[in-house]
Image (cartoon, rainbow, N blue to C red; front, side, top):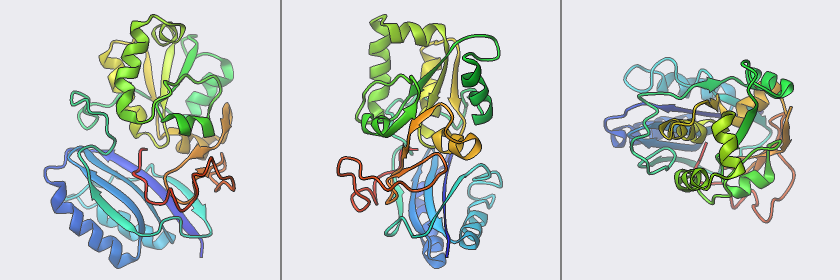
Length: 271
């Protein structure tokens, strides 16, 4: 049976995620789902794998008004595999669905401007945005993820975890480096795996008054889903047993520096 893999998230104020945790876990177990769900006061992040009808039932459950509402997961990134990429079902409570440690950044109250994969491809094809400004791609992921694949000529800060991103960005801007001038003078598109990190990153860059900042809506995985691998080099690391996906959203067969399928199976999802 074909296994459907979905990733979805939503920044939404949750009064008491601890109340949701056992309810979500019980429903997921009842349906035989496997994957990871992160719950926090700022929202939800999930990667799940199951047959399509099973996922449909669970998403209908989550879309109840008492939980995440009818819009949740309508833009989920979908991939397929011929095996179950998760070893078990985990529903975990966390302080943030992606750790930034910058409490003024609140995507549930305000989203940064987003650019669709289709529009971004147009910009990269032309070499500039709709107003004629050059575009710089800013990878907000960890260094080992960047090494597996990223957009052509993308900038990044060689960080080990996302919580280092704010300080790395501020340090770069303070140096008045070439990359800093690029961020100040060009249209910046922040990107990540599924949209969570680049959404927070874009809001933080707005806070630092960078003039033209966008997030890639849905991240690399939605870009792959909508337009394929144009202007992207390599594959995209994912935090489950598939390890990485190519631009057709198919599982890689490579072993990246010992990051085997078994060792990555229960990593925290970054998005």
